[in-house]
View (cartoon, rainbow, N blue to C red):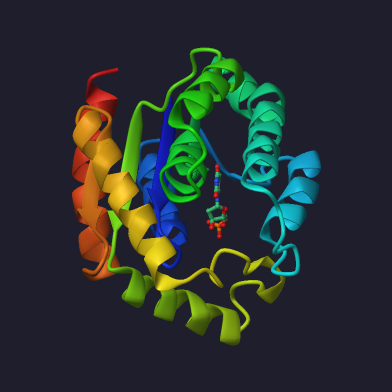
Length: 212
Ligand code: TMP
């Protein structure tokens, strides 16, 4: 089973992953937590290029291909073997980030992204995707607070440095995807208290687990 979490910067994905992990643990279910970009040793190197605020001249197509390269390695080396061994994979961002950031927001042709996604994913699809929906002004404030207090790396702020309009487009992109595929996406209001957010998410996760 593959569970993915999506959302703008500062939407609280990391906190919610901890809640999901604690929930799965309670039921003795085996899981791993991973992320994109950077779920493998090679991916960590790609991540540092992609998120370095100094790399402000990356062409959108270069950016797209680097995310795709990270994902191929991640799927082949970690995600597919883990799923095949019966583990639940919880992934912080996945292919929907590419559609929303590189496609809807950077403007790379969506058909190209779909072609690339099908090449990279080889039929793999998240069973459930949570979108932590939040006003970007609140998300960015949270993210920059974490950067200032050191809990989020300053060396990885290329996207946090984008204008508000960019993050608004990302938010709208996610909501559009959720409209297109309501059976897979669960949109949760991430402005609530984290424990309330998790309550809503776990209700949906429970249903998804029962359906397996
Ligand atoms: P994060 O690990 O702090 O969420 O940062 C990852 C950044 O990379 C985030 O700003 C979203 C961006 N991203 C894309 O633009 N495309 C992708 O395919 C993925 C996985 C992430």
